[in-house]
Length: 499
Ligand code: HEC
Image 1 (cartoon, rainbow, N blue to C red):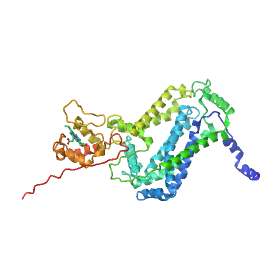
Image 2: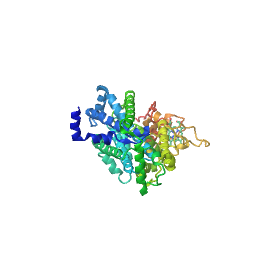
Image 3: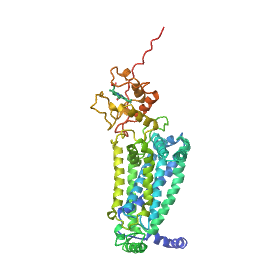
């Protein structure tokens, strides 16, 4: 044993690796929050391992993708469990990365000397989101197809480059076989390499600079700004001091990391066991009635899009995330005050609670499908151009004088007939029925109070646009409610044959 160790030591210099990695001194009193980065790394490892096995069964073509996943789910031992872990692992990555960012933000750990590692962290967040976006399409079921349709449409609203971006993502104008192979290549070739490389750089920096200490260590009468030439000296002295009174990476720090990683992995397995990844019917590009649902962590963003008027939608779709990212990237370069604890950074604390609180409210609203503004009763996605045209006609033709939609109630003081609320009309009537009804309500009810809107009042095209809009109205429970039609059509008008 000893001989072997000496032999290896002379060649690999294990002693200095031990000193630099395993025995390295760390600041004392680190919190459990300090383990989030390593927990993310642990889940990434789980994703790599489960991903490799999934890749052995998966076939990236529209003809076979769905069947290969169904085979894995139903016929491979532990296949469903494996896929479930990969599925929940993807959510866990996003949650852990965000939690880690919140920790770093609230401890001011992005400040000197860790500015570049913060930027690297944001790049990593994007690679993680890229993984999630491309992975979502791979099962090629309805959910996959339509969420990607919406996602690429939103990318298409980017000013100037939108059209080109959509073509680049889809591998053409339509979502199809080229999109699937493209997403697969990104998901299994490009992103793993990017994530591996950036995560390694991130980690090497953490090891070289040491982990950020508790905030009070660096708040013992420091120079007020980190770009003060004296700050570097101050930092060095304080950090060295905290390491002297600190602990060693092994076993003190690693023990905490291992506990957290183990808990996270057990939770993933339990989630996978009791609530798998799920598989909807195969993708059907002709089924335009399907309501796409994005991954839950995109829901606040979708809810936000539902709140803004149609004309501002594309500006918000690109502007809000764009501005947020730029602000995060710029943060360590303009915030150079040396105070780190949130208690001494009111503006930072306020922005953080504002953004997180807002996102939380939007997420909650989206889960409950709550009424937030006038148009929140529509499906949980931006309306298509035809649906928007229908919405405009609905207003222009004053349908709202009799019909309520969500918060938009007709003026009850006027002597309009009592008309049914249309808030969830899309759940109860088929599009075909609504089209025929609007065309000639009297064929349906001889004593109908609803005026007829058939040509020449509205063209068939316009009626169809309104119909599409009405079909999108699924009430407050759009995410969960099922459509159920019991439509009856009147007897066709009999043509009296002329002799
Ligand atoms: C003068 C009031 C009035 C106006 C204006 C009006 N409707 Fe109606 N609508 C009614 C009434 C009343 C009913 C109830 C059914 C009946 O009486 O036949 C109805 C029924 C409906 C229904 C069937 C709802 C259900 O759940 O059965 C739809 C769809 C509808 N209207 C759409 C429209 C659209 C679209 C417009 C505008 C182009 C419009 N309505 C304008 C009074 C109105």
